[in-house]
Image (cartoon, rainbow, N blue to C red):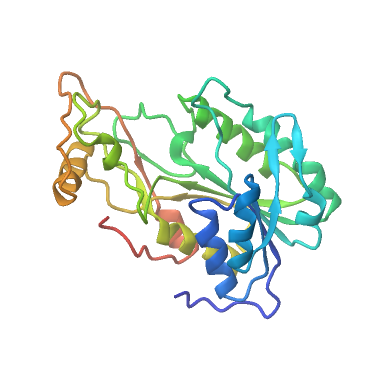
Length: 278
């Protein structure tokens, strides 16, 4: 699946968060010969991870500290992939920056020199009138999620003890996950003309593989498929294809949105997107 030549000594990988993206990523890495330690917050899931060839750890990271065998998780690991999203959409919203800050002393203690941080395109404001945004664009997030992700990116990349590459994924699609399922039949959805910025699970895994294989550290990448139809066009088309009730959109005010450019990931990593019509 991946044609990039790899070094003879593969890095040992610790993957914090084996959920929708993390588990298939771990399985893909193992299929390529990597040794992978993976974490889950659910005790019952550790057996499932072990069955996939992952050295499983039950770890819970909160804004008050880390519980579980974090020492065993990071010991002998060359690379840490941080793949846990902020929990900011409910009453018990957390301080995500503080949560990740508890990891840093352990990275230093166990000499982890490389980090991949899975971030999101919410670090860019939506109030951009369809401007194309690149990684060098001034980020001014207008959501708490985006603000905390951006601060966490800086926290990790400014640390001199390890090199962090940030991957800003767009909306995630794949397996049984598709946002149209949540929008089907809804009325008066805002921003009908705003462009979509999405990425398929297969390309998420492919880009992360490329970063590891090419040892591209200290970079920031947007990771979004290079097609950007409008929300109304895209979601109505997908609802028809899936035989779901059509959503309706509000056209009583101008749409706001952004086009997130993935040109850098294609240029630097020489990555070709596999899924562009999803």
